[in-house]
Length: 278
Image 1 (cartoon, rainbow, N blue to C red):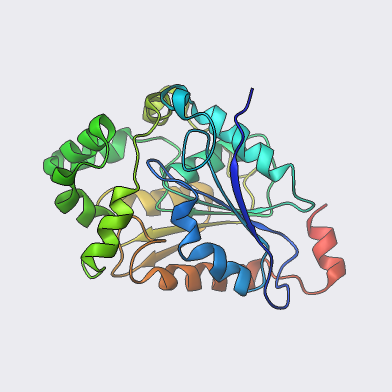
Image 2: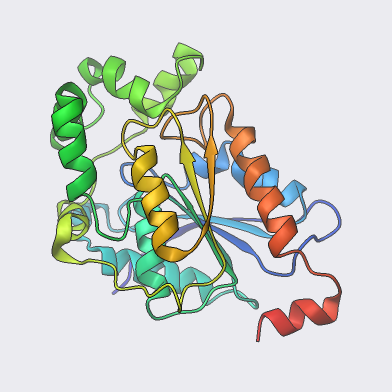
C-alpha cells in the first residue's frame, strides 16, 4: 500500500499565467521543504498553481520505517498519485534525484513540459560518481558518510560548500543542512545502474535542463550531455551550487525557469490552454 504523502498546494495569487500546474519533485536526502522555502510561493505569485510533495519516507510523508527499501519506481508511483489529482497535464520540475524520477515517469506518462535542475542524468550516477571520486575524493567520501550516518556536524564544512554557495549565511545554510536525512539504499542502487532511464527524445515533452556552474555534484559537462541527448534547451546559472533552490541566488534560477515557461508554455487564450492538455 502506498504511504500517505505530504502535499503542499499554492494557488496563483494573481492572473493565471498558464493552465498547467507545476509539480515540484525534490531530490535525495531532502523533502518538500526544500521547495517551500522559495519556489512554491514564487511560482504561485507568478501565476501558476504550484504543488510540492515529499516522496515516501521523506519529510512528513509516511513510510519512514521502510525508506531504505523504497525504489525509484516507488517514487514514480508517488508522482503518479499526485498528478492523478490534477485536471491538466503538469509541468514537472525535478531537482537531482527528482529529475531522475521525472525521466522515469515520462517513460510511460505525458506531461506539458519537464524541467530538470542539476538532475541525475539518464545513464545514472556511475559517471558523475567516478568523476567526483577522481577529482574530489574528499567530497566523494563525505557523500558516502552522509548516506551512512546522516548530516553529522563533521560533514558540514565540505559537503555544505558543495550544496550551498559560499555567500549563503552560515546559520541559514546549517539549518538547511541539518534537515537532510539518509536516502533509500535501493533508490541509490537504482540510479547506479539497476533501473536505467529508457526515455526516447521523441517521446519527451518540451524540456529545459538547468545546471549550476559551481555544482561539484552534477558538473556542467553532464548537464550539457543530458540536454544534447534529449534535444532540450539548456541554461547554466552562475554563482550557484547544487542545491540551487536554497542558495542565496535562488531567484536567478527561478527567473530563468519562468522566462523559459513564458516563452514556451504560457496560454495565449483559454482555448489554447485546453488544446495543449489534450
